[in-house]
Amino acid sequence: MKEQTFPPQNRLHFSWQYQRFYKNAETQVLRLRICTVFRLKNSGEGARLGMSIKTNQGSVVRNRLKRQIRELFRHQKGSLGDFDYNVVVSQKGPMSPDFPARIVEALRVNWLEGKYVASRH
Image 1 (tube, rainbow, N blue to C red):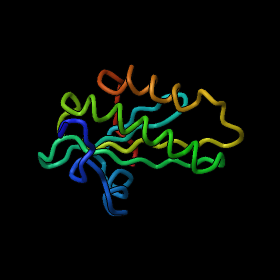
Image 2 (image 1 turned 180 degrees about the vertical axis):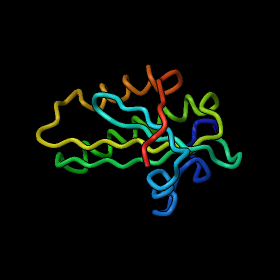
Image 3 (image 1 turned 120 degrees about the horizontal axis):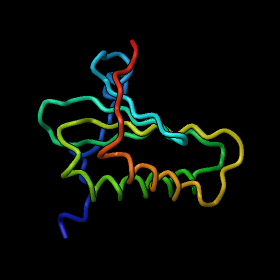
Image 4 (image 1 turned 60 degrees about the vertical axis):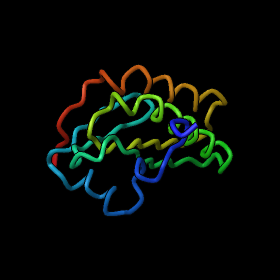
């Protein structure tokens, strides 16, 4: 049952960990139509996940989306290497009921083989 968890060492917790994505010239970016994924090499801690979810749809929809992204990450973290990931979702206006599923599908298809580009700092 242990492999079914999402332990604290697989998460980003502090604001300085998120700020590194925006300040570091080595950050790689994957821009998808409905979200953006930042990744940055870490010092061998394995894949870690952070999320910045901004929506005016309320906590139920936002938390459902976060749970689904965490579940996908948990299944793929062995293949994601020693990177810190920050998934940014900024949805203005109404969100369709299938929006969380569309984001998870876009990440599932693109996370591993997506075309990450160097960010411009």
